Image 1 (cartoon, rainbow, N blue to C red):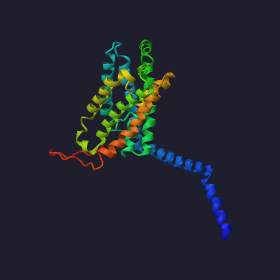
Image 2 (cartoon, rainbow, N blue to C red):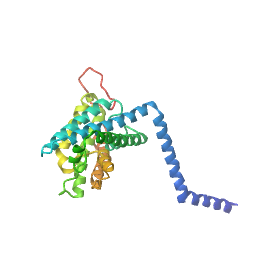
Image 3 (cartoon, rainbow, N blue to C red):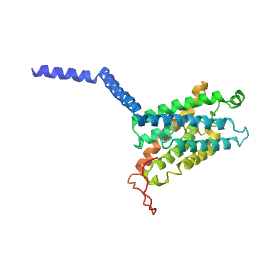
Length: 284
């Protein structure tokens, strides 16, 4: 009898460890995640945040890329484009910051999830809305711009090839550095010790993006945003090299929040203030 029981247990163990049952386990986890996301979308608050992220990314692509497309072709044109794009970021953060946080960037949303400010399912919703909103905004922009403007932007509007003298590793390092600065700015923005400085968030984030644009625009385009990197490539079916940019942006989105969380906020407490006004500790 005990031999029969052992035989049955061994058969169950073999079946459980088989690839078929492992696939069923993975499918069940994927089904639960899909159900959680669909439940979130039906929630009014989640829908409002998702719609805000969609609209914020669409506005960023329309106004930001419109300014870049209309910059002067001289050597100082990148300065005008970087300043205009930074001002657009400030507008987007001011308008949609209270709705969804105005990430408009998958790297920012991934970092926000790693720091624990949003859940994984919400992060996936954010990234999907950013890609969809960016594509919709870019399509609307291309429909508005005249043909002469689109033709003078090589290789495409809001798309810039990295400097020819840069290797793939150098491109990755430049995008990693610039995206790290951007993510560091957002980590500081979300930190509870910075809770009393939320009113100036649009100005600070706009200036940060402008400074990064000044530094790296002529090197790699200073995208710092996977959505901004991918959408013009997909829209125009351009065969340029983009893996180093995406690699640097993704690496910064994962590594920087871990460093911030482990090295800079291990025993963080809200800073004391001499103001009599109540402190705001809600993350922006």
